[in-house]
Image (cartoon, helix red, strand yellow):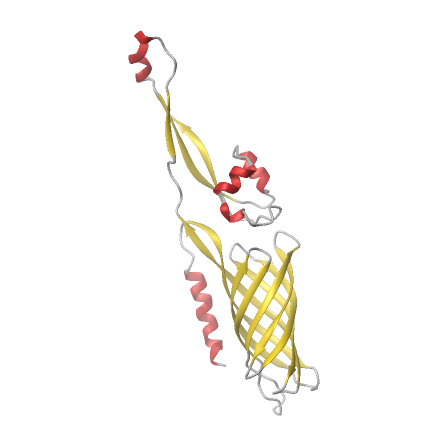
Length: 250
């Protein structure tokens, strides 16, 4: 039960990690939540438990998690179960906000026991998700049964701060004039500067429409927004940060 007190600290760390700047999502995340569990072979063996996990996202479709769970069964004859949990999830995006997942792994409490899990991830905002799932841990010798649990967790995905690029290059544009008008041409010299700025994605935006709006090809868009290079280009979320370039002439 000692790990329960760590969960509020993890949530505070997640909140403090956000500061002003331009951000992209990190592959690292933390989560904490509650579990409602039963034993397959013991009647009236309900358990309200907890779990805290650390995760790493492999691109957008796979997630590796590791952490600690605790199952406190109401039946006094059943030993409480506090395993170290390692699980792998395969994600299937079904909308801009939700992804279904299935996965497997192992729970270790002196011995290793296989587990299977399935559920849905729902995006609350840019960094926060709600994870609602169902999990089974099988052939647990200490309780002589399987454990089936309904889990609700809140997930925080960390952000990476990136420095905004200011002036990239300068290119003076010199008009073609007669030799006797060189002084006048120099006085009227027009200097154009290539600058960078950011755009915050709004609901209903698509990558191709954003690229066209800012006069970019899709290839150039992906070149300066590398966070989208290995993603499904049909999925883009509100509040994500897009970088674009423009020409400023004075």
